[in-house]
Amino acid sequence: MSNFISYGRQCLDEDDIQVVIDTLRSPNLTQGPKIAEFEHEIADYVGVKYAVAFCNGTAALHGACYAAGIGDGDEVITSPITFAASANCVRYVGGTVVFADIDAVTYNIDPLQITAKITDKTKAIIPVDFTGQPTDIDEIMAIANEHNLVVIEDGAHSLGATYKGRKAGTTAHMTMFSFHPVKPITTAEGGIIVTDNEEYYKKLIKFRSHGIEQVPYSAKNGGWYYEMTDLGYNYRMTDLQAALGVSQLKKLDAFIARRQEIAAKYTEAFKDVEGITVPKQLDDTASGWHLYMVQLETADRKQVFDTMRLANIGVHVHYIPVYWHPYYRNLGYEKGLCPLAEAWYEKALTLPVHPGLTDEEIEKVIKTLKKIIKNV
Image (cartoon, rainbow, N blue to C red; front, side, top):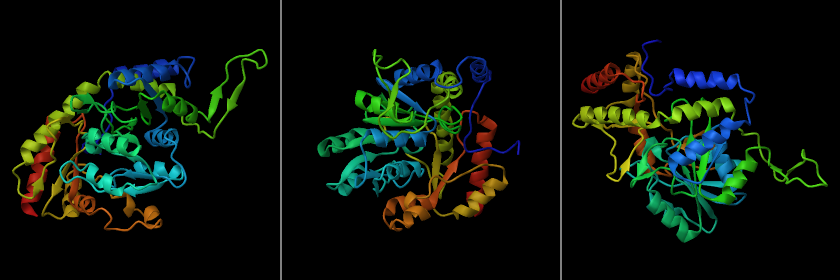
């Protein structure tokens, strides 16, 4: 449907298209110079020493769990209001997922609930910057330091956001950013881990390429010689993706500014509408507004969702609590585990927000939702 207003989508221009064409015409389609260029540009933008690109964000989280040394018997605490990858990555390495409830204001994981879930088996925390609002990373790092835990920040939504004047990704031991088409910038599929820790960096490099390490040249071994020292995966990003990422990154601040502008329009329009609760932004953070989510306090969400869709407005819902999914239910997780998260999910509705939205489309979203809320 050409007039369908999607909740999120990529925003590409001719420069983006041209750099991909140029890379297609270059000698290197993968494992070439664009990978290192993109990693350097991301690290420089965030303000960290190292960045390691992966084929997608899920693979990047898997790599971070490996680098952190998470394994059989280890517990990792995360939020239930997230895409399943934030928890699945723990399962990939044999760990046990522990869900902690959310904060009622930010919808991010509650540091007090994290503390309550820590045991002698806890190895790491994976806080999620949900909707683009940075989690309270200083408080979480203080908890982690007290208990000798690793913090892997899931920043899939938050590239370009700020926390206390610092870019998201500067504080945790490792932070993952995602480059799916609906994310702040895109490489079609893609993800990256940023860190200041050289040991993690080396492990991530090895893990994404079959567990292989290049061995320094010696007279005994030829220049072709390498060793697989651990079980890794082929999680490499291509140069095509990286070239697009370099081009997209140049526009990130403009993209974030437009998302913030759209969010402000929604908040102004809905803040006094009975039956709608708008999201709150903390004074010391600047959300990247990957998602703009309202709470429907009285209206039937499915009715609102279906009616908006009939009007060609692509509302959505993010996310079903992870432990409600059959895979986790089969592991013994039960409804009622995180009451605030479950109550929040039951009322949540995602409105369209992406840099390509026109003012006319924004106005249509506002008018249509107001009309539906008034009439249901």
